[in-house]
Image (cartoon, rainbow, N blue to C red; front, side, top):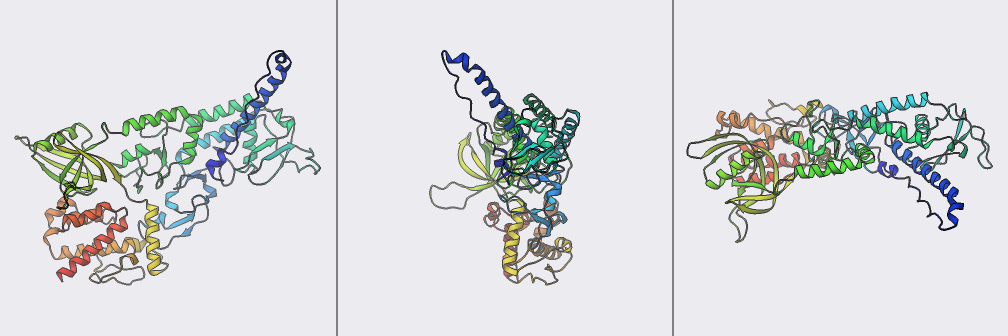
Length: 571
């Protein structure tokens, strides 16, 4: 049973039957009142169990302590994390925190999570700490029910847990052994005590003996749950928009933000807004690749469903463009994270740029299509979203633009507005880091078996004349290697070593002027392909292949093939 299913496992009792009519009403009044009270008690009991699951660890059943939200979006106690193992056949990113991993304990996931992606969830940790403190005080500061000790009858995983007074016989069986504990006059606090003792499984309901059940006051349960709600609410605001979480997403450093807020932040700088840790989160809009924080989502929906719906409508209204389309400049090829310089002189594009400057300073850039069959658009359907970083207006109305590539897109439909192109677009995003690692492990393992990459292998040696495999085996640059058999870092070293050799030969395309525009050769495999494509004197329609890729590894293999083709032609 999944965490979400377990929280919804307790069905609400059926509503009471309609009251009798006519002369039977007076006689049935007392029974109707008793039935209404019984229904209310069942509703409160079901609500208490449902709310309590929100603070309960799905693995150990105890109240959450130092909760960790896994990359799959599920949360457990830090102490409940499985044992780690060394991850093999992975060189990128290959940082220390990603070289160790563990199998996800949730059957619905069954993926391998990197230790570096599993920090303590800051929001949940704060909320659960204050809730535990309040419940501990509630247990200590309230009078106990008449029974000074109770006994618990375990009925099996997923089945109700029966709590009876000590010494009470259950059917024909002997009384269960008593526990050295007492029960507060609240179902919710009683569940808290049982869970703290490790007796209440996450997927189990709990029922109390009739004598105990009569001692519980529904008003007390409602008051406790309202207190839990008010305490948790203090931690449920996003640190970017300062409003209630909507579609909460937790970063590997443990901080949580609304998904659309985090997308807006990493659009400018890929760092956590709170701790400034570099983020390697991709495909943020894709809930399958970057699942939301499941527990925080259920907490906000359980307590503040109306407010969540209002947040949803506000986010949709805010994120939707005014007419759903962006302006498109049909001109040249551009890439994410790389600069593009433009000379704008046509009247239609002057208007387009002026409108972009009045808005969010962004527009799309697409390449002219090669001549083809009649009826095809004159432009390619893949492009790059550019942000204007600097503009200089000339006296005659022309302008010089400096832009930076933001992201890639695919044109879904297009039209003409005042002479220039506008289009509805779909974002093109990379697969997640976890999927990237799985791709590398699968390809390298199929080609060469088990390989273990350490920190030294990850770093490589930029000064080395040839790229080096783990174990010391060299890779001849001019030899047609089997790309799938190379680790991602080896592909990176292969292409980077080519750049170093070409720079030693003082080729024109690596002149100081070019490096001052695009920067020195990057050592980040995620950035290198865009830089290499911007520098290498290759046909634009060949470089255009990069825009359709969805993984760093895929782009590096294309770059390495360019290197092999170049050297075959040159030597």
